[in-house]
Length: 248
Image (cartoon, rainbow, N blue to C red):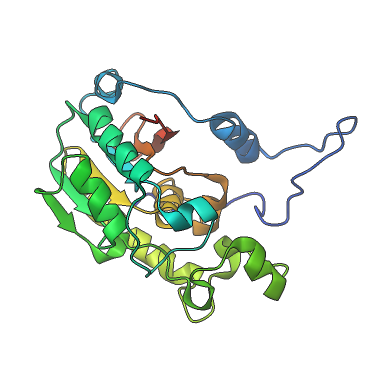
């Protein structure tokens, strides 16, 4: 991995709402995040997009699973194995169409049913390797609860800072993301990973050399495709595409 870059701001204490007549200054990374993530990037032909990049540099494609009943209701889904909804299955097939024409040396998948089904419907089920490090954050006592319900117990709770009681801490999921990144970077060809929102956000933050808590800045929709890569060479990790969502 690239050396970790120290942040010049705390993503949990920076104010998020300012008066229109007196906007507060924004740190450079916050400003960049606002520009990049203010709306989903709309790239329809990912194969053509990939060919337009540095062809000699490998890329890591991240696919989040399709919709489930709990992703729709906002309930935290870690160990609970839920099927995709009908709409989620249609979106998973659309992920496959968007990845059509791209060659992958390795395909990795979370062991959870929702990711495995998305991988299968996208056309990669027969070649995917199940990897436990791609499993979603273990939410412990907060499994099945919405953020609003959790904050009735702990008003100041934030998963990217506090982790989950009787589940995984931020340090634990960060270490798991680092192990996964080591496998994703082990080679000169493209790789593809199917998983869930929070772990993929942590993987992206760690790929960029940032603390796991910066995954808070990277919102990620169901059945989205994102690309981690490099700018100039393998010592220069970059975010090439984030949260590309094309509904069927």
